[in-house]
Image (cartoon, rainbow, N blue to C red; front, side, top):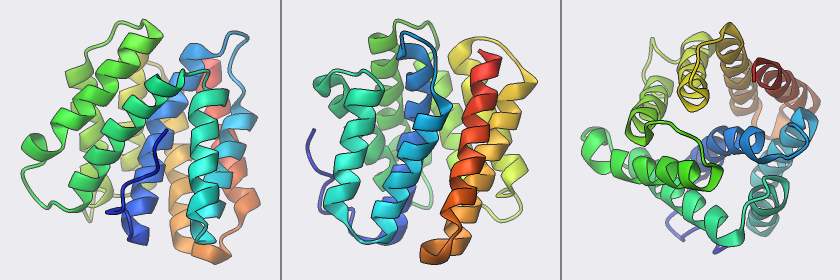
Length: 211
């Protein structure tokens, strides 16, 4: 898997990229694990990525992301690279745009979800899921729409589309994940990593129960 492009030099951009990569690929975990999901491992992996990011260690960050994609998610290297690069490009274009999201961002998101659909064998509408994904990205940067409840609702909508059914646990999992992200963003280098990881683990435990 290639390193993130040099354009990802700002902390804000990189934090967004890592965050959305984990949200998307956490879904891949539950599709691909042959013996059932491991929420604790997903939460620990996400926490390690953020610790690497906040300690300004891009090599460790890349190593942890690669491990998460290729080993823990049981993805082939080429599959992991394709999904990660499409989603990373979408995140970068979103970060550098303030309008025209559908033209600039949506095509890369569609490619990422179409590839995820291919490697998992699941049946979902990649375009619709991409639009739902973009919607919570926009909410996260829009004052008045960026609460954990609102962003979590959007993440839960993506889960529902991926799994082809509605469950209240999807929303609960999304809200918990959004709360973890908010706690991490607010605390920065001084955040309570144990609390972040605990929230993430609760989120993925909830998702696992739902599927």
